[in-house]
Length: 276
Image (cartoon, rainbow, N blue to C red):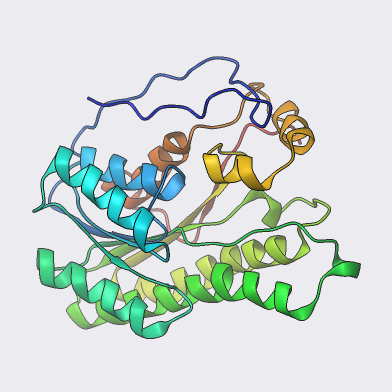
């Protein structure tokens, strides 16, 4: 089994206190068909794609970055086979692309069982210096994009009558204040509220909707857009003295997508070791 590598300790990324054990799959999603947005690269989406495959699911990956998506699909196909992995460019601000991505899962695998809404856009800007375009872009991708994908999946789930599961990616900043993050925090708080309301509506046709709320999951993109000082500060706030590996968040997404969480809906699960 290939274990995804941790982000190396550099001046831009604090080292983990201890490397966690990478757990093998147990067939928790065998026979299921899943769509995962923003699944290219080494972040939570890519880790979730791998964990889903290891748990037996067939996956369709979407991402706005066509080159990175192609590379991710090729790597996973080489390991798991072309019958189980496919991908298509998908910008979650485009409703037609969202619909096409979900339709691809039905075409390739005969059905859609699981949607993971991982697409999101961050950035750092103090509110007094932020313009409307910055605010709108983060909200459109992170909150409205999640709504578009959720709405499209719920329409399919309702039509088939076969149930389904949606897992959204929120963030602890939806609960906790952080300077420079008003747009991202507002969007992630909106994802939490959307999760709860959608869950109540979807329960009548047997669909569960939950969310994860990670604190600090390290990946190369975060290293590029975050200062070493802020990374050190955020890491110091974690009880284990280290950041989460993306696959540790993906493990919780697997749980929420599986039958082991069959009585859970409308819940936001914190994947965090932060101090109160």
